[in-house]
Length: 540
Image (cartoon, rainbow, N blue to C red):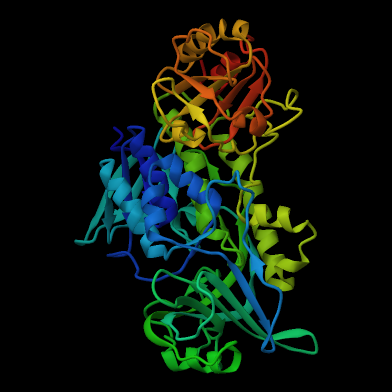
């Protein structure tokens, strides 16, 4: 007898994302975390525009926007001299910018969302061991009150960090190495007059080579920053040995703790303005490794986030990549729990996300060693990639081949937002992302001629029969097209934005997946491709 559908080990941003999305779909979850409470540390701080889009889909972007601060760019200083300013300016069609939000706030927002959906975190409860067969996962938990509990789950997801029990229990390879540098982190306030909203990167170079470094990321509050800098010898972790050989993460409660005097010493050397640090909220020493698993799961057990990939924090890619791991996996797990997962749907998690992890590990390591300015791409492409807006799954086994998209996004690409969509009964337009929020697969059927609309009802009905309860559909009508409405919901592309952004042609159908990527685009809408695609996804 199975006790729960999915057991999730780890209640950081990755585990909470998976749990919230599973609970929204009616999947029973248990979320366990060995820590008795959330850590009050501003570890992961940068929130990428793509993650804000994910939170929009999840239904919590409003809370995030109210809690975060804009990250406008970066000011560079070398040997006290100001270099070129980096402004994080995205194309106008991208709905969200770069943001800074302490990890404990991210976790609070996600945990609140999970609670609203009927879930909760079991604190002080640790996954000790597990085994699996073709039908279930049997796990042993160490409980906060003492003793152990045995339970069975249909699936197990390891979101338990760089020292993951789940990864080790699966016997996954975790190839890579540690970097020699150690950094200390501190959350402090300063009294300089540098412009708000900009990260500060100040370095000292000797013979053209970096010799000392200070990086300051703005946080909510008046002139408050999460600072990272080289660790002085007296705080070094070099003599410490990790039992699992993975040298990555904070020094922990029993390790060395930098004081405000250590941070002030670095500011005295490198700050572009004379300043005094105060109000130290927390500090730690941090080690960095670069590693990635050889596969993202085996059987009924999966890994996500730091359990699957670790790398330098350059560009704030880690937490954001992990959140997208969980977002990709959750809808597929929900289909599997319901018995409606086609052959290869769960396996597509590894096929889609491991190449992303490999690229992120390689890129952040390259940037940590040589700097982001050495990136071979043009500045706009580099910025879009750092924003994680170029992540895509072309060639995925569950994405239709791209044979029909001369313009706009191809199957596997991120489904972009657009504005100017209007219901007949509304006096105001809405964004496409508003239509997609908290939805499953969504068919968008575009028409620029009355005759094309005639087939839309039949297409939507056939698709709904193939994926009952897992599909929404909209007719998107070109400006000026006022054909009597079909039975499915209608929005009017009043500003011609949908056609322009998607390169849409009359009679074309787009399928947007629950994770905000296109599963297919095809024409004509009345053809067999949409239904056949859904049948493969859901094993009909």
